[in-house]
Image (cartoon, rainbow, N blue to C red; front, side):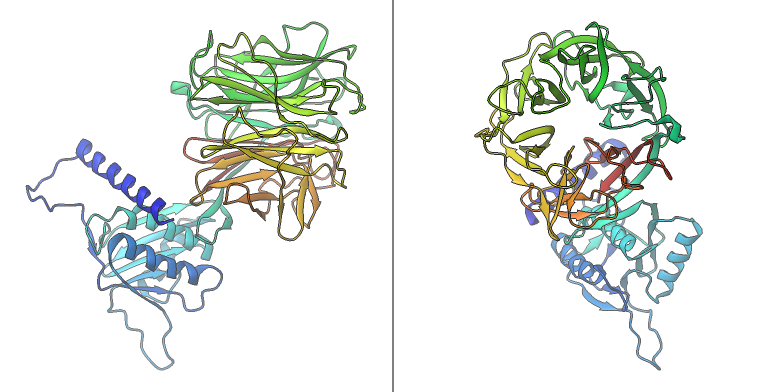
Length: 557
């Protein structure tokens, strides 16, 4: 952890130096001139005496971090005053929480005036620095901000780049969880993308997927979302992929397109979409081209086809490029079907390959297996390779979800054939390369957490480098197989690359009337800053005849 902090500190200092070189001049030739700062060698850290939860431990860690980065060893105490004694406010103090000091009281009043439901304030006044939030968790978030933006930017020993008169306030989101090393997982935004509004709609929004554009120049930051739509039979939108777009980071959404298969004849479109943006030129496709992979089947159900669509105008219009793979007959009995399902894309920079992972029922030696192909020119695809193919023919790995996890890759999937109430258990397999998943018969480990918590069917997976030395791996699915949850399926979190998990409440609870279709195969996207974008399909209250599409943005501080 110390190595990681040192690297982050060096990076932030370098940024600070580069910014000062490009944006301002020194007014003094003295080489010791730095940004204004406060000598903290005589300061104490004072927290609320009645603090509970993680605030006391956080204060102790705060002292260690200040020592590490500034070489100042500060005493930690509380704001307790013995009965009959007067409060002495003469000392220099860093105040944590809503202490009885006048600067803390003034800071909290200023924060309350802003009307934040969730937030914190940092206020320097005289020889006091107050950090206080709307609750203890928000105070911890404020301390984290203070560490990142003041402590780790210290340029001289025993000083902090903050002076009397400095005030900073920030509105945040709901804190979902605070880790033992005080990383806060925050729900920054929760909005509705699409709501059919009436039970008569009978719309199922399964296979929700999301994409943030990061390779499209002026359109970077645009969000696109889609889902597999199964409306009532009178709808013109039947079995077509609706495309939704947001240009304000998910605050508002509009429906901009419907995607059709114009390549294959006599097919039903609309199964299991996946959105992807090309990060580099590939064949005739330019960097920033938006891809949509999905499955279709012929009207007579004789074939299932994995189709590739694309857009070059930020999702306004779509064309069908061609087929990635063609499978056999679809049969509702999964043990006699010969189809292809659930494509997932990933680009590998080192090989300039675009990979497509999917479920394959065509091999007679397996009920279903997880396979992949790749292309380097968007015209031809490689042979098919196995990632998971169980030796027991009755086992049925499917619904692959994939993420890059540092320099590793993590593949989550449901393992059919092991039936439990609520679905099929979710397994996780980790590899060092997209081309080497080891023995296909090895299906990795069961995703489980303390309290006998397991989940099943339709997994989604994401990894962000935020949240600790190993980052944070997130996994969720359609529903819980075991262990109580009030949100139908918890969000499973791992801080050790998937070796162990804990659970938190799902930020998009899907259970209202326990309809079996909702929350099926949700979607994640992690941007270059480590923010997690999440879409899922909860039921429309108070009925269970249709679902809405919802969006959440999660950040880790």
